[in-house]
Image 1 (cartoon, rainbow, N blue to C red):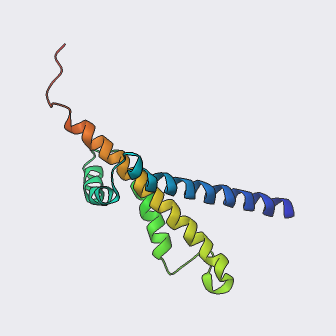
Image 2 (cartoon, rainbow, N blue to C red):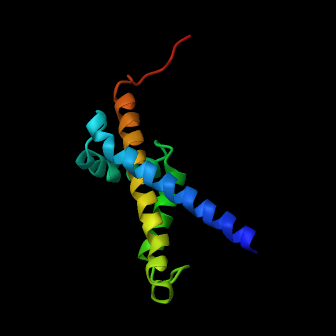
Length: 127
């Protein structure tokens, strides 16, 4: 039983570390020449619309981000805060960190896609 608990704790630590790395990478991208935060947030409605129109391939990622948002906002929790106090908040903190990193990464990817798409001249390829 202790071996399984140790493995679960190690898995959670790896997830937490990956989530914080993704968030750090996304937040510092603006200082390394990436799009600023305001531009990324402004791109969200266009990204959702392009995904629903089938032009952008972000459907699965948007679904995961929506599920993460619902999990954080839901009054039903897998690890209840009242019973476990600070440890009950840890799962929400990890989810929020992952969500922030995912949104920032995906909006950067979308903005790159938008820029490439704007440089393409519509027409037919003639062989």
